[in-house]
Length: 303
Image 1: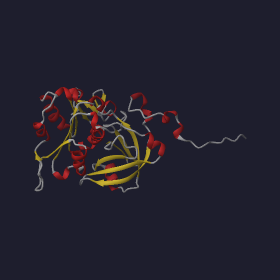
Image 2: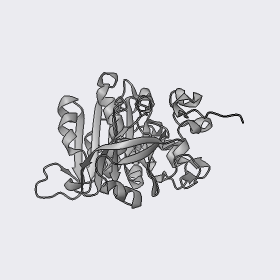
Image 3: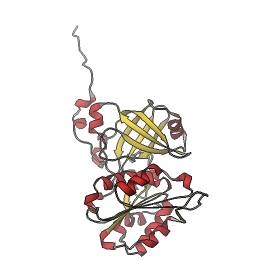
């Protein structure tokens, strides 16, 4: 009888794995349709509902190979329970770990909130389109977020502040319902003093200790002298916010092709298979989640 020796299988020897990650091209989604084994290295309580998870891919080769662009997202998997799409909130230049800001809203996110450092998770991705920051070089950049929208906006903030010499004036605007809902408050002084960017924060319902702006985030645009041809805007937040902020920017003369929004809240499987995110013939997880505002207005029921 002939004996057959089965050698150990090493996924890292596959030709597809040896190549750099493709950024969500339809014909090459198989390159990212696999799970990276990862561990939670730290968990930071940001508010009553949100936590920031520091996640490290376990395999050295896979960790070195993983990269993403600002605006993309990953699928976080808990075997036996499911997976959720989460926008990446860390710097694209950091190879050591990934940061995800997660709100407790369901079974999977609830289990993540109950986890402790050392817990194992799976990551698929990165998926989706990204904010075209290369197109914004040499221009003024408005980074506008409402509520949890600061989470996907944090990656482009990192990119812009780490490459500040490539941009003209940079201004961050952030709004929340109450002061206790503000995320990443420990970084505000860093953005102002170390990176010398403009930062304006506003809340709708102040408490007794609040001394900042009060009102809707659109009111922060009242004090801006905007040069339409030299300015780009990235807007992240609840879809209802897009209409008010982007329409206000349009009234100020900013072209709709200079405004970019993220529809990441529609994500589910990340690969256009479940059809939960389709708007007409568009799958926001494949064709998005980043769109310019002109495209969003032509997607029926996108916002």
